Length: 307
Image (cartoon, rainbow, N blue to C red):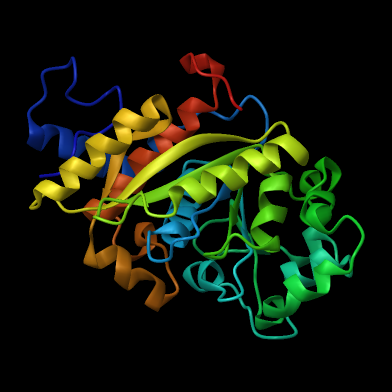
């Protein structure tokens, strides 16, 4: 059973049946132009991080970005993972030699020169990662301000050239120098947590690293959002993990939960987000619901200020 949707216009308070609610969710996916999302009070830069692999980190980054983009919000994905999975999902060229985040970190090209528009939406941009990024951590060690290279590249002036409302930084599954750069460059951290037994394994170390970055490098940084992924309603374990995370982290956990979905897993193989691959699927609708929550949290018009 799919967890309740987060949209205030769903059945909660309106007396809609579950079928009517699902129809409303599908309409928001299939006709996003009719369901606008609020622009943030100020540009939001979110680092999507979890050093544990396979938690839906890249999947969440690209699908949240795509969901915001189809609702008219200009969004930029920074692929900071040498594997380049975010670039693949957005069908952005990332062969070696392509202007990428590697050259941006080294100061060889500007952010705007490296950014490419995804064919999935004119509002969706991506700075790709090439295999060259694999050696970047070693090269960065000897550079001045090595932890702030990405922050310098993501200056207000640089982002203004592209003119985006949201920036999502997709980190590698590690706590190395690239992830530290992402945290120094952002105001917010979004942590995807899968609804499985080992969900909280290593999370303490991630939070400790975030605290260190807050203390020494970026006082504006906060964990603003936790997204529960890979929810399997057939198991008691998924509900137990969900409840444990909600009890521990409270309001920062989105109400929307992303279900385990074959469509979500298949989409990157076709160079697409799940919103483009199968917009009527449960996975697509759930990411649309999650994006609506993220957008509403960034607008004081809805009673919540941006971080």
